[in-house]
Length: 106
Image (tube, rainbow, N blue to C red; front, side, top):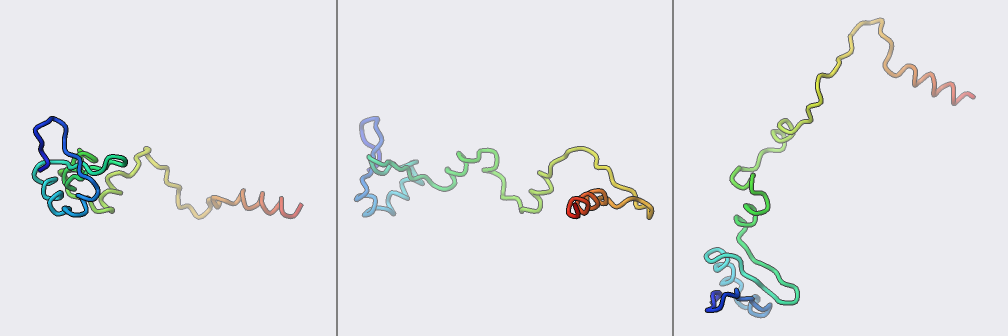
């Protein structure tokens, strides 16, 4: 049905596709991608094949939970400087607050 004697693959019409969707899906699984339409062509492929071609590296891997993905892909920018916990240290935004208050009063 899908394979013809010529080298050109069969292109299903929209009417044929509506009438024979189950068969086209079965053929896509068994024989490969099925083409539908001529003016606005579409290709029907099994999801497994779509995933393999869309994301080749992750096709064989199971989806990673979001939390694990975030930890694995967290940006590494180097060492962070942790401020001291002294009681006499200056509040981190004290200068900004003073500047804002001075501008508001002027």
